[in-house]
Amino acid sequence: MFSPRTRIILQNPYSRLLKLAWPIWITQAIQTLMVTIDLIMSAQVSDADMAAVGTALAIWHPISFFATGCMMVLAPLLSRSYGSGNTQAFQHDLNQSLWFAILVAALFTVALFISMPLLPLLKLDTPLVSIGQNYLTYLGIGIPFICFIGVFRYLNESLGQTKPLMYVSIIGLLCNIPLNYLFIYGSAITPQMGGAGCGIATTLVNAFILSALYVYSKMSGYTRTLIRNLRFEKIEIPTQIKLIKLGGPIGLTLFLEIALFAAVALAIATHGTQAAAAHQIALNVVTNFYMIPLSIGMAATVLIGQSIGQNNVAAAKAWVKCTLIVSIAFAAFSTSTIILSRDILASIFQPSAQVFHLATALLIWAGIFQLPDVIQTTFASCLRGYADTQVPFVLVLISYWLIGFPLGLILSETDWITASQGPEGYWQGLLIGLSCTSLLLFIRLKRVW
Picture 1 (tube, one colour):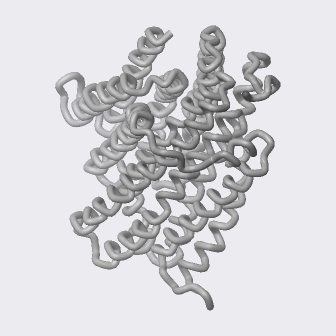
Picture 2: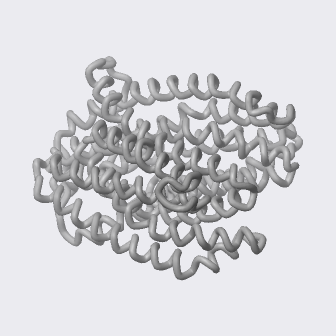
Picture 3: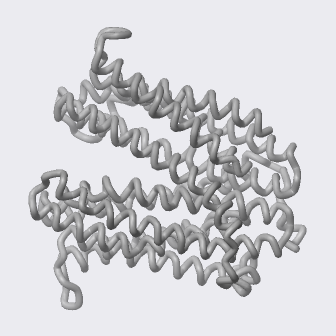
């Protein structure tokens, strides 16, 4: 049994929630920064290298987020076993997660290599296709590392230990820059590979993060015994099916969200270069703000899962309310910050006067967008704590693709409801879609209660 001193106690809930959430936020920010570094360093070689890496990422991101989304099922699963105090059940779930990581890695490695022929279909210049395919190949080699990182990440996070991944990610980020330099520009021991070399550097960093997490878990007093008994025990098909049923919808939900924003970006691009640039400014601002409620939600998933494992329904509800209060407070802050500081935020990107004007208009919608976005993220994360993933996926599918995007298309491109809104219409559609998601997920959460 887990030591009684490690059992969850509902004291100082806001402090405990934020204590778990801030290292997750740093980790998420580092992952985003590593991609930015790849783009910046590849741009120093040539515009073609940067364009190839950026285009390849449009294929990589949906697949990698789908895979990591599937692995997120381990957060509520292991948290529930930990909350119940049943070490044997926790160990069993952990051992079976090794097989699940192999399954997810195999599936999405195949998916990535099947997707690579899409690059030539985009009618890109030959150098871009070659660089992009090499970059994706090197990233694909690292998919197993990403999946097994998920195993050790959620092993630690389910026990309330969110700092280990943050620490090793910081070291990984510091390693990423010199590794990029070695493989992009070449050295006495490495070939000059241009932008494609970023893929090798990223895979090596992921291999380091996995190794470091394993070593930490082997030495930590929280996880030492669990790692000592970690092994590939006989695979249990019913357990794997359960993981697929719970994890698949999480991955699909993340995929749908990424696909929605990709579709909106492509649709706005038809309005011209200036509209596309303004949209990217607004989207970049929203993405950076979004990392905070996402991290709060991931912490809530763990805390709710632990409470459910203890059969403490009241505590689970208390964590939901606590998370919602913190998230709404942040939404109020981010909404006011974006709207009141939109001129400053847009000017950071040094746009032309026309792009600046349109970006500030979109940032008003981006600010209003914060409240439903933060709330739906909170409800989705809380439902994962209850291990409820299938119905939320359907609700997201309806809200995003049957309501939000079609309405955005109508508001932007037609005068059926009102005068054509141009690029702003798509953001209005996103706002409506996310509002529907928030309402539907709230209703679902009430039923789960």
